[in-house]
Length: 248
Image (tube, rainbow, N blue to C red):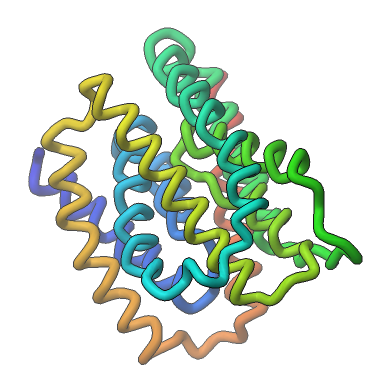
């Protein structure tokens, strides 16, 4: 891999880690939005790196969380996640081979959706949703995770609507994102797509994101949080629109 390309990607990863720390926005969404907007790497390569980064992040956060997990809901969501991931990866392979314009349009729409959805605060339900609804939202997240490595928004929205403690919600999401990242990584490894460049990008990105996370905690920007979040939403919307209109 060219040193210049590696440095550019690491700069994006550092900024994404910093803004993820101070705003709570999804790390993968920011990385995918910035790299796709700049045309730095193929969508498949970035999605693979995001999956590996999320897997490491989730595994680090997982110890001590399993006792809080609502396993019936997690299992239901998992039934939707696994086949949808495979479908998403296969669709990405097909689009990258001969339908790149459609791929850019879909990626643009997903980036806009992810940015706007993570900015909204879902209202709480009175009762716990059915296993079928967890499977449905799990399928939506699995499909986005397989297609672009961005599995968060549908499950985040659905889980935060549940009338249960926040620690149980966050623990469920960590388990589900671990599953999503692990299944996607295993599937592309079996396909022979987990090449040296992806592993190198991931190996360099993890310490860079760790440092930027530390910096974000110690030195948040002197900007009101609401304004900062709105700025990131605007950035993602602009990137999404640029991808959509450049596809023609």
